[in-house]
Length: 40
Image 1 (cartoon, rainbow, N blue to C red):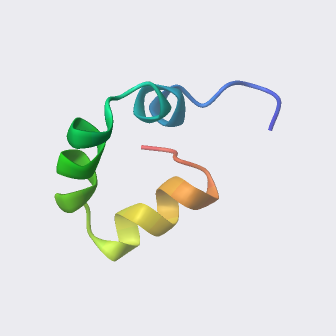
Image 2: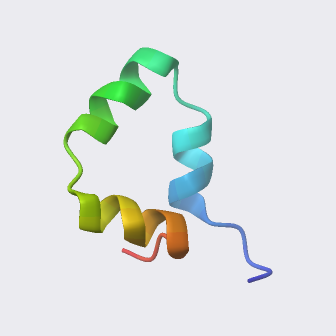
Image 3: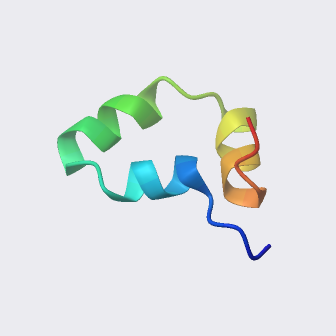
């Protein structure tokens, strides 16, 4: 788990409004995958 997770890094750098917007479009499964490893 040493390599940086680009998707998580992108999300962490988003403004709150855009972050909420993106998370709204995710399913629970996608959120779980993102939390576990973010591999997409």
